[in-house]
Length: 310
Image 1 (cartoon, rainbow, N blue to C red):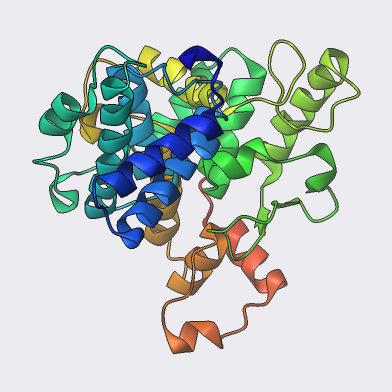
Image 2: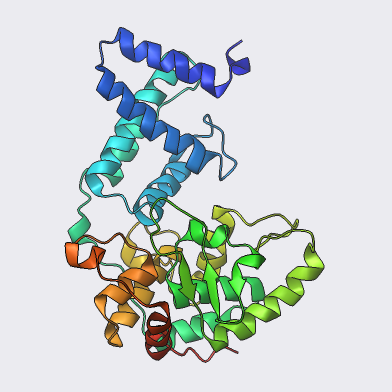
């Protein structure tokens, strides 16, 4: 029975089908790489099954590629070429009734140009009002950490309580492929509400070491963090869930852009911003330029926006 096959068995059949079609080994390797990320980093993390394919899931995956993995348009097309081949195979083998990849690519990807998209960058006062409008302390802390540190969604999810250093007001992030510097700092107003959340969290699940947990006491997942930002952003008019443009969207990654913009506006050196963001250094002078952590923290505290969080 087809429904009894594991994902690995279906994938083996797909690879064999590609070979029968005469695809090159390199093309098959690229497809397997893209599908591996789709399966393990997106579907599994969000508790989806490979047959749970619809336009909403595809929109979420596209947003994940653009915002979390920071993938460019050309590479996104490669991912969707792999998805199209895979779901075309599933349709041919009658695992699914239809392949939604083709109409999705036609609508969302063919005319997409990175340089034509402008992400909204709210003023400091708008972010202050946004954060103070959030009634749920956990979500308020999540938005504040994004705004004050510029970390990525996956980096925030993996933070444990033990990763926080209260002596220097810093967080040591887990080792991630896209992250170079693993230490980020936070200020006194962030510390104040973070401690409020820790007191509440202790009563929810004292056995868990995850900093952010959901209603059932388990580590918060990607979609939970996304909702913690967009739910409240929609209420204050920053996020329109019915729009497909970045101008009308305000997600966790929008706060990474906001953090970067504010630190630059406040005069932080480029190399310090790169260090706090965890960006890879692209120039030789960057690679050999050692940044002192004490100086970095001082520069951070001097330039990070005060948001008047209550």
